[in-house]
Length: 313
Ligand SMILES: C[S@@+](CC[C@H](N)C(=O)[O-])C[C@H]1O[C@@H](n2cnc3c(N)ncnc32)[C@H](O)[C@@H]1O
Image (cartoon, rainbow, N blue to C red):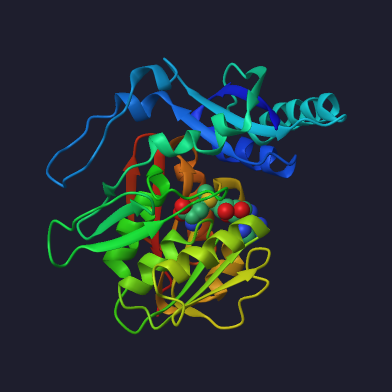
C-alpha cells in the first residue's frame, strides 16, 4: 500500500499541536525529528543507550511527519491540515518556517520508521523507560522500569515535559496516594505513579487512540489493579478529589481550567503540570495562583517548564 508522507518543518512549541492536527486529519502515525534531540549532550552515568544518526535529524527546529493513506480526498485533507496549522498562530503558538512538503512512501518505510529514534533511557533517579522491543538489564535494584509501546499516542516518555512530570511525581507521590492523570497519552505518567506506590490512578484522555494505547501499556506494566483509563474531556470523568493531580497538556489548556483543577486536588495535595513552553511560564504561574494554588517548584528542561503547585490546607 502507498502512503503520503507529509513533512512540516516547525518549532518545538508547535509539535504537539501539529501532531494532534495530523491525527485528527486521519494520519496513521506521526514521527518527530527534533534537531535538539541529536545535539543534546548525553550523559553516561545513567547507562543511557543511544545510537543516533545525524542524517535522521533536521539542522534546526523540528520536522513533524504524518502518514496519510492515499485517497481521493488527499488534496483537501492536506489543505485542511495547512489551514489548521496556520491557525495555531492565533493561539500565540510559534509555528516557525512552517515549510510543508509531501512525498509518496511504501507502507514498510514508515510503519517502523520512528522506532529507530527510541531506545531505553534513564530519565530520573529511579525511572528508566524501555521500549517494548528492546532488551534492557537494570543497572540498580531500586530502578523502576516503565515498558512502553507508544504506538500512535503521544508519550514515548522521553519528551522534556514528560521527563519533568515523572521527576515531579517521583518527588511528590507517596505510597497510598490517589492520583489523577489528565491527558494520559501512552499512560506513562499513570504507570509511573502506580510504580511509586499510588493506591489508585484515574487516567483520562480525549483521544480514543491514546486511551487504547494507555490501556495496553497499563496491562504491559502490570499495574491494571491500580490504574483505570477513561475516555473524557479534562475533568468530566473525575468524581473524587485526589492527593496528586498531573496534567501534561499545552499551557493554553492548563490555564483554561485552573479553577476546576484546584477543586479536584485535596487540601494539602499537589498539582504537577507541564506542556508549558518557557515563554508562557509566568502566565501559567499567575493563573495557578489566581485559582488559589501556591507554587512550590518550577522545573525547566530545554525550552519547557513544569510547575509543582500545592493546594493549601
Ligand atoms: C503532551 S501529551 C502528554 C501525554 C503523557 N501524559 C505524557 O506526559 O507523555 C497531551 C495529551 O493530552 C491529551 N489531551 C489534549 N486535550 C485534552 C482534553 N481536553 N482532555 C483530555 N485529554 C486531552 C492529548 O490527547 C494527549 O494525549
